Image 1 (cartoon, helix red, strand yellow):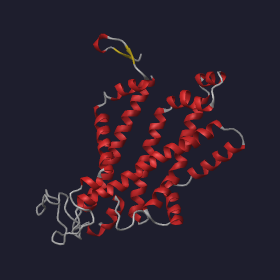
Image 2 (cartoon, rainbow, N blue to C red):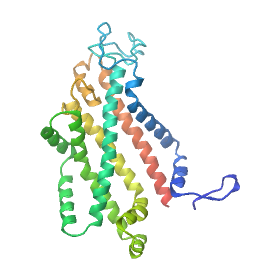
Image 3 (cartoon, rainbow, N blue to C red):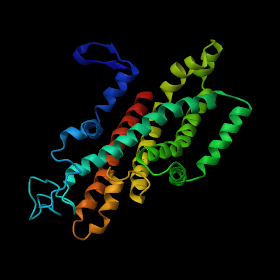
Image 4 (cartoon, rainbow, N blue to C red):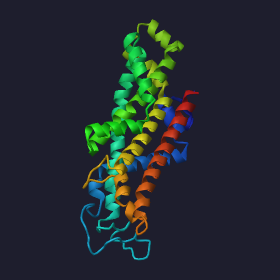
Length: 296
């Protein structure tokens, strides 16, 4: 029951309040949520919080190690690269492009994909059949290959990289939403809403979407993770962010020749990508379990 007995009072909780109450019991997931919020704040304020410009060169401080290694200084906490640019400032700037781009892609795909998926699930006839076969055909092609083909057609730039990654991941989200909605259409409460004369909009709002939160969270997490990896991969291959702009994948590629002299210039961006994906996955997995428990 959705009952809160605090202060010996009975209070009916809404489904979202009940899910939040269950989610708060998972300390790891709550910690991951706050870290995820902090990462978003860093992306929004990246140009303000850095102590040095990521593009200014300090010729007297070439290839400085991080401050905890002998020879490092607190002036450049993560050291400098071969041109004397501050590694921490470049790391934060690169994270802004990678994480911010993935966040933007996820929001756009979630909105557009939900509309297309819902339309496909509630549409019958030749139009629905063509859309289903087209999505099945696109899903047989690896998303990274689709992104590479599109970026070659559009041209290499950060904006075109985001467009290419968005178009490559959109079919997966559409298909996932479509299957989730179709699985609900045969449920008794949906049939009752239809018999009551509910429109498709009302059907989706009150009958379907509240009951597919768990697969929806899983889909969003999957799209976000793949977006980060594809943006970084395209940047590493030289198809994404172009100089002087930087992105975590491009940062690794630019410093690959310094792997023996300054391995931290490669390790830190790769570690940041790994930790970001892990933190977001812990948060969404905790949220998913809370939703499942709430539905039980």
